[in-house]
Length: 149
Image (cartoon, rainbow, N blue to C red; front, side, top):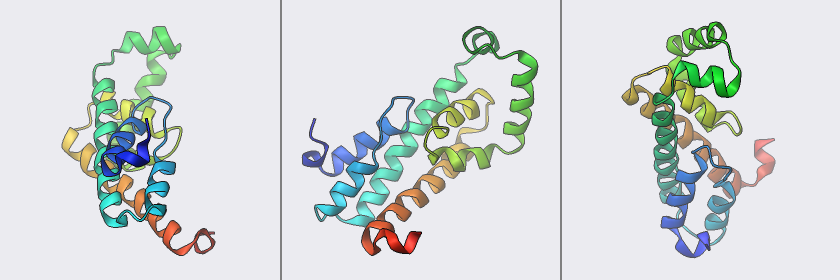
């Protein structure tokens, strides 16, 4: 599939896929579309909404989780899981904000769902974090990476 030819739709679909547990990234598509003169504001909004939808899909997958699955499939004892859940329940909004982080963001979204953090809180903070990420990418592209480092 040629994501660039799909334009904004390609950005939307790729950003959803990138925020699930699938090994997929949308940053290259985002930058490629900027390079091809697509509107940076529209791309940022579309990518942020798509990425939030993908994150919420992962969140709801986490809500389906059961204690015995974590013990059986991941070898995590319930006592260890309970310690993580206390932390997530205290700071669920912060975990949602950082779901944009590569590698750990998707498992964090599933953990937030497993911890039953309210979906409205989760989606709000998830959208804020993901929006900031795409805003930084757009600014880095526009002004060059040098200002960022």
